[in-house]
Amino acid sequence: MTAWVKGDATDAEGAIAAAAALLAAAHAPVFAGLNADVAAIRAAYRLAGTIGASLDTQGAAGTYADLGALARVGAMTTTPAEARGRADVALVVGTKADAAALVAALRGGKPVRGRAAGADRQVLSVGGASAETLASDLALLRAYAKGHLKDESPLNGIARALYAAQYGVVLYDPAELGELGVEMLQGLVRDVNEVTRCFALSLGDSDQDRAVVQVSAWTTGQAPRTGFGRKVPEHDPWRFDAARQVSAGEADAALWLSSLPAARPDWLDALPSIAIVGEGSPEAAPGTAEIVIAVGVPGASAGGVLWNEGRAALTYRPGAGGGPSAADVLARIEHHIAGKDS
Image 1 (tube, rainbow, N blue to C red):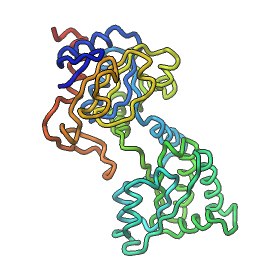
Image 2 (cartoon, rainbow, N blue to C red; image 1 turned 90 degrees about the vertical axis):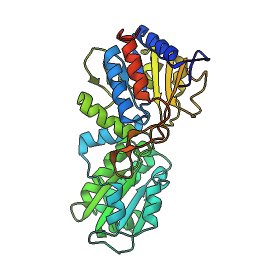
Image 3 (cartoon, one colour; image 1 turned 30 degrees about the horizontal axis):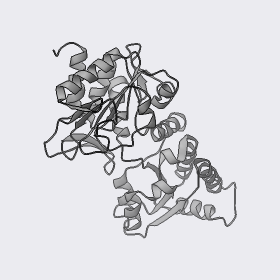
Image 4 (spheres, rainbow, N blue to C red; image 1 turned 135 degrees about the horizontal axis):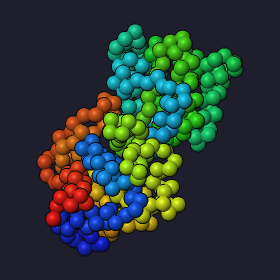
């Protein structure tokens, strides 16, 4: 295991002991990133519960755009496999979704199952320079779909195509669209379903936020952005926003968990921090945090259960078997804090 403490190389035990001491001395530590396999995410939740830390995720902006809309208006969703196999009309909302590999696959194929099997597939798009523009376009599209507006606008043509579909799918990136836009999109999908089949499909980044949502649900009964400061899990999307906590001076230590590649937040330099990162990543270098511990990368140098975007499910991905796991490092930190290791 490669590790550094304050820029100096050390062995695994030295780094783990230093990390345990840093976290044990903190009054309000935050855990962020959580871009790792399920075992590591579970270990992070156990450690947070032990020391009273709060947890936030790498892709929380997209996660909460989806969850906020889901809580208010519900969702009618499908999977990538169903979209590839059945959709004869696909509407791509925004530029980020348009760059997804699934959209390229949809453009290059035809439906092979269901009533639309063998038909030509239409792939339509709605652009927009901002979340506000996209939400406005979706509001207009919904007005055309409901018949409140009638003219020869391209949006009217898209609305007619959705209503004529055997199986329509609307693809979007929740972080780009924002909560208001996602809510408007789900309303459009619901409207079209009064006449034919239509579903939404969220295409997030390659981070493991969806794995975190599931681990958090079965561990705490709540979504991420959870705090254990009062020894019971409390969910609050505003209060436990890691960036906000650091900016407000509410946090005094941080643990950044990213055994899979993820952009390091700027605020990590603002307080004493520990980085548990994948071997070979740019973050696995001295000085990127006060304590840096390099671990195996799930699905590459280590095995692990990860969110599989293509299957929309948790699946195991084998690794080469080299390198320690993030889950093991976190468990050993917890054991040190609990006094189980000398």
